[in-house]
Length: 231
Ligand code: BTN
Image (cartoon, rainbow, N blue to C red; front, side):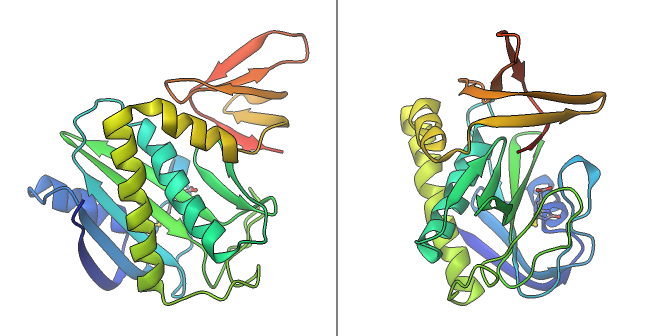
């Protein structure tokens, strides 16, 4: 994949910029990278605090598959690989659906947004700062004592990994992506928070649609397509 990186000092949200670019016909591989965001967005309408020092980028793809949800695992693997390279001694794990944890704390976030014929993968990586986040404990590369290269170097590594995993998905389907994700995933006991309450259980599987399967205390298994997971 050839990446066309557009670097901005400040923007509202790189996802909004990438979506606008997609609507105006920008090609797959367009990347919007901003040093800071004034209205960075997280999942479920939450804000994503975006001071200078962290990585904020959005990648435009035009996948042939309709199963855009698979790309959230592709992107989580790509970020996870970057984090493992920069923090080889730390315990880096992937958390369903698409977070990367370091020593149990959230270090990145992904926001996938699809439109007619395109997919935008927004990625935030806490390099220098992390938010005082009431929802999840968070961390940054700096807080974990990583010696981080310049942001541009991190971005290039991330894009290389993303290209690798996207190509794997395209050529071989979801199974190798699923297996790689499972090998790095945080499993065990967890709670899934839904709009109407929380459900406790034990990680049982990730299925071919990217759904989480949770083994409930009574012995039945429940499938989740979305939700916030807590340990
Ligand atoms: C989450 O809630 O975990 C997802 C956070 C996604 C943040 C990234 S930063 C780059 C891109 N632009 C945005 O406004 N959001 C995403």
